[in-house]
Image (cartoon, rainbow, N blue to C red):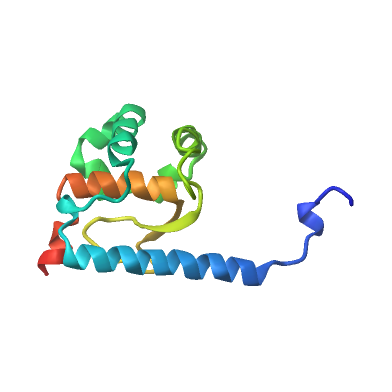
Length: 144
């Protein structure tokens, strides 16, 4: 059997669609939870403290709630942002599906929308949403 060459691979559109469906289902599930439970009372994983502490160490700007309130996709996906986030993400290889694609709201004040959603990896989602929940930025969802 030869070595796999991505440029010669078939278009795996069906697999991409399945990933997209799973990401949307995860977003809907999370939103449903936030509608029932104030985010400040929500625990996302058994690793919440570790993820949050590492976020503050690697991204000290997240000590200010405004950093969690609005995520700048352009910075996150810039060469320097990617390098910083990759180093952060690599510290969580022991967490199942840490690098699975997921949807992240760019603003804590908005619902999921086509314009207001960033494609991120699960550990980025956890880090940002754990911070948002600890700062009470998602509590408005359960209160509306």
